[in-house]
Image 1 (cartoon, helix red, strand yellow):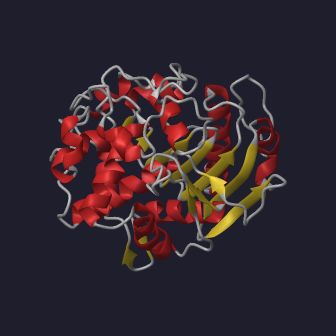
Image 2 (cartoon, one colour; image 1 turned 45 degrees about the vertical axis):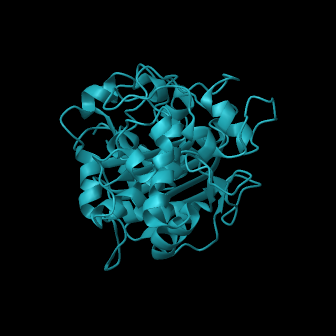
Image 3 (cartoon, helix red, strand yellow; image 1 turned 120 degrees about the vertical axis):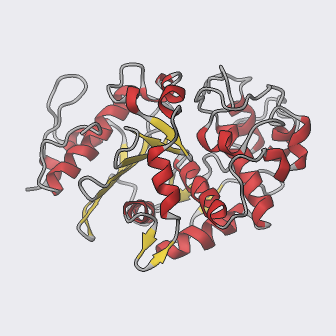
Length: 355
C-alpha cells in the first residue's frame, strides 16, 4: 500500500490520510527509514532532497551527543560545575549549575521560554545572531558575552524547565573542553561518520560563535542518518559514533527524572498530552516514556525526529509552521510518523508513542 494514503486519527476526531495531514500541518519533508532503506521520501515543493532545512532545536540533541562523547572519553564530568570548564561563567547566573543540569535542562526553576516576549532570552539571542530586527536591548555582539552576564539566577538540580540558553552554555563548555569549535566537532565527530551527503550550515553571531541551541540546517536525509545511528545504539556499521552507554542513560535517566519533567512538561508538549506523565528530558533528548525504546528530537515550527526501536523505524517530519508551537499540529504530525512506523513493521496498532 501507499503509506501516504493510510488514514490516521487526528486530534480533531476526523480521519484524514497521512498525505492530507502533511499538507494541513505545513510539512516540507517527510521520510521513513525501515529495514535498511528509505521506505518513504516525500517533499513539498519548493523543498527537495537537496534543500537544507532549519532543524531548530533538533540541533540540541546533536550537541548533547558531543557531550556524551567527551564524557565517555573521561574529559567531561557531568557532576562538575560548568564554571570549572568556563571560568567566565563564575560571575553570572550560571555560576553554580552542573554540567548535568545543562544536559537535562534543570537550571531554570520557574523559567518559561516564551517566543513572543520581546524582552525575553529568546528575543535577545535572536537579536544577537541577526534573526530578529535590532531593538537595542541586545547590548553585546556575542552570545557568549550575554551568557556570562545572564541576569537571571539559575538553580542547580531544579525541576525541568526548557531553556535554550542552557544548550548555549553546554556548547561553550564542550568547546572549552575539546579546544575545538563546535562546528568542527559536529562535522568531524558526527556528520562525517554518519556519511552525510551534503554540507550543513550553522547560524553564528558577529564574532563567529554558533547558535548551538537551534542554528543547524541539514538536508533531510542527513537528519535521518543521525536518527539511524541512534537506532543502532550509537553505531554506524562497525564504528561507534556516540557511546551506547550514553544513549542508554538518555533513555533511562535517573530516579527523579519523571518528577522533574512532569513539573513543566506542558510547556512544550501541551498540558493534555497523554504520554507526558511518564516522559523525561535527558541529555538534550525527549523520551516519551522513561526506560522505553523511543526517542524524540524536537524543534519549533514543526521539526520532529522519531527514533522508534520497537518498530525499527526512523521517522522525520520537517515543517514550516506559521507559529513556533502548536499542540494540535505537533500531535497530528507525530501520529503520521507513528502510524507509518507501525505499518512498516506490520504492527498497524502502533499509533501512539506510548505503545
